[in-house]
Image (tube, rainbow, N blue to C red; front, side):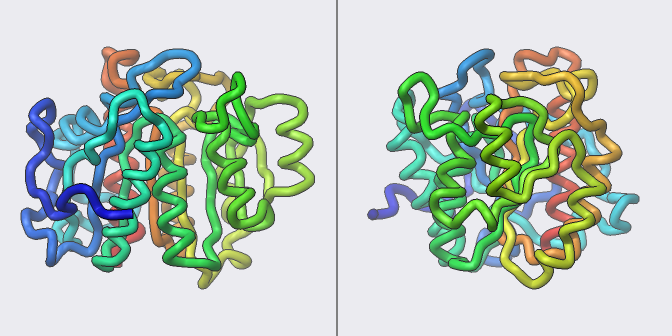
Length: 295
């Protein structure tokens, strides 16, 4: 597939005038590249996640660049904010193909891709590129939902099918699921039998599997709705009973020991949360991910 645009483009789309706090202006010197995937074409409840990447960037400007959790500062690393992938509105399959091409180009440039969603289906494009780059890939899936359906309302390209697509591509034994608390009876039964499945919790079960993930290439896909809606109400399908922010930050600290080769954070719908707490939490998670996964 030909690459339809310049990955080095230094400017954001007109609706977003900000870059993530501390980003360099030099693509070539960057170790990691932040990119947005502004899509919510298949959202089944509350839409608006396509606005997430722009708003996460904007609220990041209120963060400190220093992380007391990791004792690192954003000035210690180099990362570039490439803006948003231009996606064909309303066409999920073509959008996924374009995200795949974009992330493939980042891997070819030896950059660590850090994606901002967008609904969870966007991760499928990025993970396809990661699988191609790292055939031995493992995927850590952090979410409130199983996302293990073969189709949703007859549609195979859906935010409810993304992790089943990953399982079909690399085998469910290489997929690790944490924080799950919503799905069908059949999805839960299938996950318990096939994936590494740790429902309801994140940090403790994640820590227990670190030895078997050590040295393997790992892609982390993180849905903001793993957090309880008391902490992060700004998401399309909120589910009560979730984790709280300290557990999320602790999980990133644990994953610092892994060979993380890609990361995305999805399903932030800023218009649903006028308090901005969801967006601020998302920006802080991106800060922590940068400092944990960029050498």
